[in-house]
Length: 383
Ligand code: SIN
Ligand code: CO
Image (cartoon, rainbow, N blue to C red; front, side, top):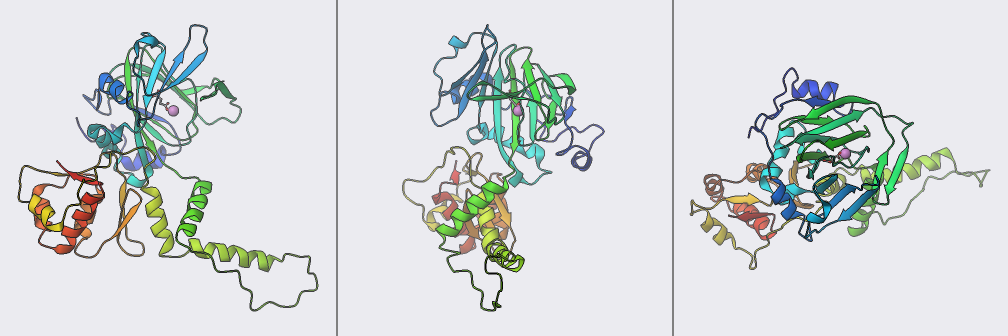
């Protein structure tokens, strides 16, 4: 499979300018030859696992919607049509699916959350709904009719089942049948609805955009965990007031600044945000060795050309240079130095580390230690 989008008349620059967070877009045959990164049987296998979040949404003959939660051990009861199986974060279990994320490498990786995969039987779909995040939906095998509208405050919120939020009918601006290799981009809060015409697989690269509420709440937890922010508001230069019942504008400003001081801390906030953004929202298959490896053992592995160092599929990592270089993996932080920056970049790239690369790093103890640590944490493993 190609790992680039066939943009046609567009470019990533034009896409960001004209469409990203603004307008939905369908690109026909954006991925020529793409049928799927996993097939329906493999997807069904994942939906049988306890730790993998899955749902089946079906429409009953009386038009009532039904939602069943996985794990599933039998799909036959659902019949041959009118249902969709949705499996969250398939990229945490399928490396090929995780690699679909590289299609959107023109957007920083921290913005990407996961790849959800759905398998729909004829007439299957989840109904018209809104999502609060951007999504790129790639059509794998099969055909689906996708309708996408524009944000519309007059749409009614419907709850045909306690676990299923939908919206009332909308006027589509895109109404097309998608076929294998087609790519649909839907910005947040744009009503959309996909109905399968035949058995169909859809791969949804979903983005993450934290709410301010989530950030403040996680930041408060971080302050508490680090015993920070415990010192008290101070007002040494207070002047006499003739109106003691008034909370003055100056005092409101001082209290605001007092709180913002924590967020504006140029060391603490970047550390918090890197850790926050690399936390996984779904179970990962961390591969922690039974016995921690020693630096010497890891160095020894690089003598064997048949093995490869791999990141755990779906693990989130990034590098930040604010205020100094740090590698964040799965909510953990590793300080980088000049010598470890290059290895850190590879570790953050989610690409395998070739034995040749690994070998070249082992001459430096700091690189040896960094690789040993990420292996011992189970974030990377040897294959
Ligand atoms: C699906 O693939 O059926 C659901 C994708 C979505 O609309 O969020
Ligand atoms: Co959706």
